[in-house]
Length: 310
Image (cartoon, rainbow, N blue to C red; front, side, top):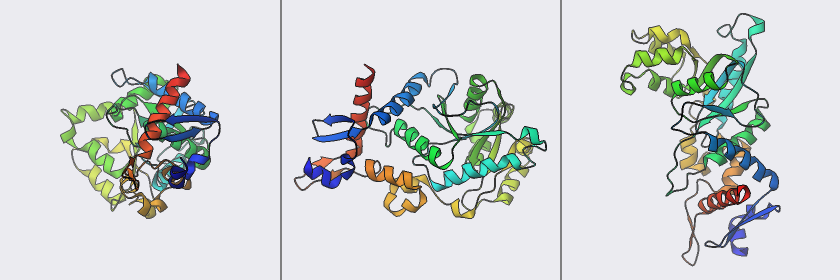
């Protein structure tokens, strides 16, 4: 154990709860407060059946959805400075003439969102959806107080729009926040049997805010929406300005080369990456033993939550 502490000093931090993995001879410590937060979120995930009708839930501490809301769906694996910048910019959308010319209609609630998906039981998802939700919750509480987290059982935008409308009938106007790469996919006919019918259904329930990505800018979006087959949907799609500084930040790059892109994520995320080793390959010790720290941590956490609820 002493040798492992040399590699994983974060094991010293927690005193309240202990979960022990006999195979790897590694101990994982979690505070009671942390365990409680994990249990609350896991209970929500257990209610979300991907095969059931579209449904949405909110993480405890999130505002109850009503009135006008913006929902930013994503995997947030991990959350980056670009994600935060997009959410911050979305807050300013309420003051745009595009949103409303009436002061009394400018109240706006903001949510980051994730959808539940089937996990390959043979492999540990890195990080667990549960870990990503808790990390995002920690980040938003610190950086964007008042921003909620919404959880979906489905992944398509039209299904998520249906989920919001059925789960939160007090919502009046719904916007999905997306990057430019997503709007290209949404408008691509190759993804549909009947694109126009599907998009009419989507835009009967929601509108889209599009943030530039890479070299795409306002003119790029204008040209896309000016194409004859897209013009009918242009009134439901709005540009959300975003600084050039954030357009090339990528969660994929952070996952694949975290050490080279730590400047692209907030301090809370850097700490999570360092302490959990979520994106690190297995470590080979001098005696040839391989330790996949995050995989063992994930299994220990799942076992701990199972014991807590049994």
